[in-house]
Length: 172
Image (cartoon, rainbow, N blue to C red; front, side, top):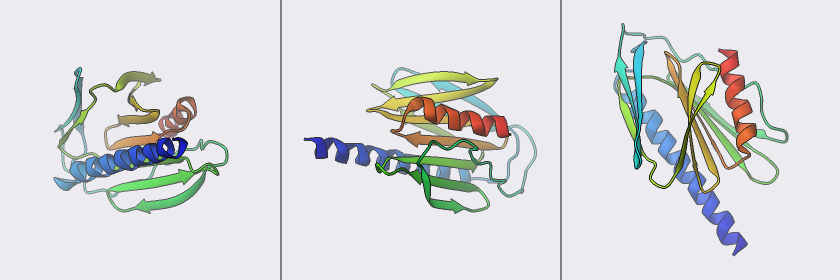
């Protein structure tokens, strides 16, 4: 039974990582180049919608990586991918728990996430709004600034993940 639970958690994490990759791809296909966006976030009982609308000129700048300063103890990078429009970093600890971080350029697009039956929280770190989804002990944090969207997903301790989020926000 315990192995089934561990297997289920890994399947859930892989699914969430897949959804995040689809999100990043969707966000980056249309323009890559648009600099300023108005972000509208609406949370309903069954789904969450994030809409990015073009607000200013075209920006052809490449992604400037912003990585977390804080990494929980005993986590080591197992994969790091970066290109002109997005980056992914995966850490893993000795227990096999993974943390996924994504930074992607904002484009004029939207995403709708099924949040039925999932705990959804809006958090503030300073003046930065963070959306947190928790489902079956997997925490997902989403936020953005004028140029990038950021995502952290893991089943690791929520407070430790929030420290990672804060270290990124404070670095900008």
